[in-house]
Amino acid sequence: MRAGRLRSVRKIRQLTTFNDFGLAEPILRALTEEKYTIPTPIQTQAIPIVRDGHDLIGIAQTGTGKTAAFALPILNRLAANRRRPERKSCRVLVLSPTRELSAQILDSFQTYGRHLRIGTALAIGGVKMGPQIRALANGTDVFVATPGRLLDLMRSRAVTLDHVETFVLDEADRMLDMGFIHDIRTIIGRLPVQRQTLLFSATMPEAISELAGKMLRHPQTVAVTPVATTAERIAQRVIHVDRGGKPALLADVLKTEPVERALVFSRTKHGADKIVRGLVKAGISAHAIHGNKSQNQRTRVLADFRDGRIKTLIATDIAARGIDVDGISHVINYDLPEVPESYVHRIGRTARAGAEGVAISFCSRDEVPLLRAIEKTIRLAIPASGQVPAQAPRPQQRQQHGRPQQQQRGQDRNNGRPQPHAKGGRPKHGNGHRQQQQAQEGRPHQNGHSNGQRRAHDAHAPRAHQQHSSDGTISSVAFLHRKPEPRPAARTERRNPASR
Ligand code: AMP
Image (cartoon, rainbow, N blue to C red; front, side, top):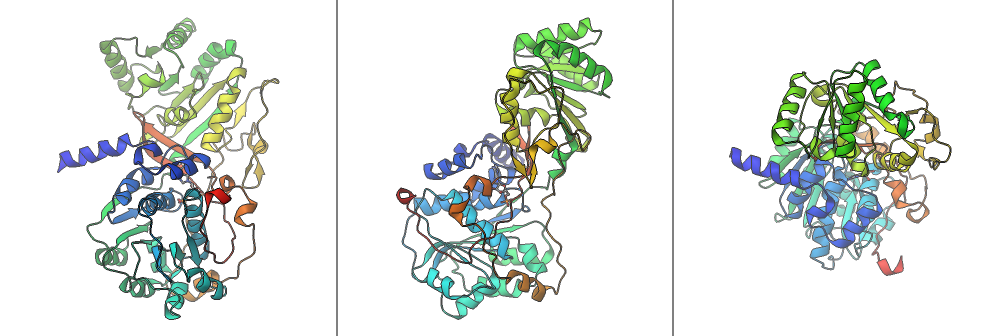
């Protein structure tokens, strides 16, 4: 049992890129276009389970990347097993509690499936049923709906659920809060017995566990904790400095900062040794760990670092993979990493086990493009001090919640921390609020931009994106907030890549 669990953990840990999931090429292409590089933990865990056709309980809230966790493997199965949907029917039914969430889910399916010929349709309350009925007439692959409108369409015989292959119940706990539980039971009763069922919920109240017990068959459960706080606990900042000024700056930082244990990253082994020599000259004891050191030396240095006998350790990225030490108060990027994702892995060495952490990056003129790439990857402007070198490329103007990036840069509004962002929180809804909620759900659409009017990348741009990794694997994620996106009420389309 234990061995089995360890095996599955190891298997999960190896899956760190989207290429590892065996997804169809057109899906991977869409992900690359969306600039998704690292799967989030819920994606890492859920995608293989859903892809293989198992039932799943996913305990995850909005903001963890859960939509892609089910949409990607579902699209993959649809692509692998193409079939014309039956009239007035769908192959995949996704139920979500609100109009906005339903629209976002539909948008995700269309974005990730943009290179596949997949039909999608949306049915939500508050708008005319006519277009929705017409959209379903020839059947559709993916149908996203809110429960009330789905029942109305079923009663009007505009849709039947007899041919549903995969059923997704999203935000199940919120459905419960909004009083939809009876509607859900009715809908489940109309689904074929033979189907794949996925249930996502941020929490598992008893009523949801009961429902899960009835509607799922041998489900596998995956859970991710909301970890937005992890990223917020790391105070990140950049100091612009000439390459030649780095040794003195490092000595200064180590002397003035309240360092308990510092891990300093050097790009090369040679550089790591040079940093140690510079520090020793400045009267600061430091040790290096890298591939040229013997295993004995490495083990001893690591043990001393762990026990607190060594306060400052200089490491290369590869050597740092084996470092799993709590209590690292500071991560210092003496050199910026060539690969932006390494930045995320590096800073994840601090703020472990609920502790606070500081990540300081030294950036010389030639490293400014690396800094830009990191900021693009984490989708966050890191507060900076020091002079941005004149010849360096200027940062691109990027909007973060309507606030230009420039406003954040260099203005340490938050004690050197990245700008806080809302956790994946959801509005609270008490019981008995169904009418109010349904009224909200039924609000007519404000006609926003059409899909073609905006870049898909913008629609999917997370606000901030932080991933942690020990020995190179993902251990936590905090980020991923969608932009609310007003959209047309219902549509169905077969997308032909050639016509795009
Ligand atoms: P969700 O939790 O599904 O609402 O996702 C929140 C946001 O994260 C959405 O804007 C997604 O487009 C985005 N997102 C999901 N997965 C990833 C990923 N692996 N990398 C970057 N962004 C992602």
